[in-house]
Image 1 (cartoon, rainbow, N blue to C red):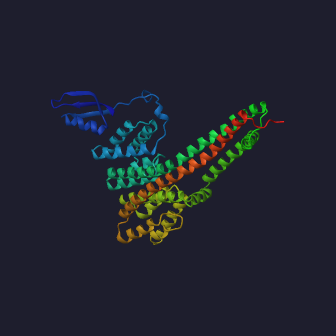
Image 2 (cartoon, rainbow, N blue to C red):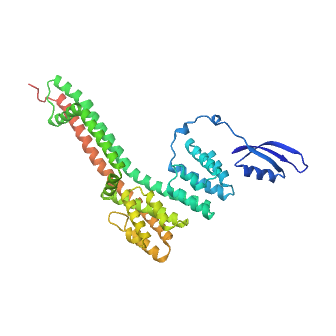
Image 3 (cartoon, rainbow, N blue to C red):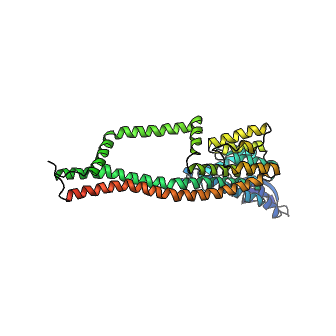
Length: 406
């Protein structure tokens, strides 16, 4: 809420002044008129920038979830009858993250300077092309509230799809890294000390333990070189990923990985159907909807398929034919789009496709989790078990009769 200094005249003609809190100047003026007062002057109280002080929330980055919540809030406030500027100011005040608050304040400033809402959003990197395009259509049609809600739903589905895949891959990765770290600690930190103890007692290490110690010695001798090679390899992979031709190759190979590739293709199909349907339902043209959806696709292979399909549609070709390429979208998508093109209900058909593939992705994630967990357990158990058996065999060698070193 903002504070406003007002000068008014009552029914008797007396002049009054004071301060009023409201979401916007228009809302403040309406409230004063509702009291039977004639507004003479209304000025917003400008608070100094340092009055709010620095907060830890200024360091928090803007998440997709924060954008979704703000868009839902905007849609609700606009339905309640607030003006766009009043709703934006209220959303800015209610934002918990300092960066997001500044973004909305900059959007308000841009609109007050004469820019459209869509242009103001396009200046902010945190809003993707889908949101900007939907807002532009909403401004042109006068249905900004429903369009904002549709944009928030599209972002929510995209975030849910990405979170599901990351969760599936994160658990086994963390468990595997922890197990490897424990094994390395045993090999480098514990077993060499045990070796010194056994040699002092004149005992010979078991062959199994000796092999681990040989590996430990090699790591200690070549550790710096190994780390340099590993870091260089990671940097090379990152650079290859950032290089557009390399990114295209990596993304194409990712879609061919057994099980995981199908999950990536299903997620990409659901994202395409959700975004494309939201754009078409809001009144965006087919070509522009394809252009926006192409930029939203995280996988370059799938984005290239959409690009080719858009170019062919501009030449008069049907959309469905050019989306059915091997190792691309799931086969159901082009088939259902062909039905939607022939019946004229493409947006409704895409909604069904999105729901179907979201359900398919949930099942795939559960199946992958069920397969990955035993594989991780077996792999980690083998590595850690080998280290522990070697350790205990060394202990038995120290306490048993064993062979003395001659």
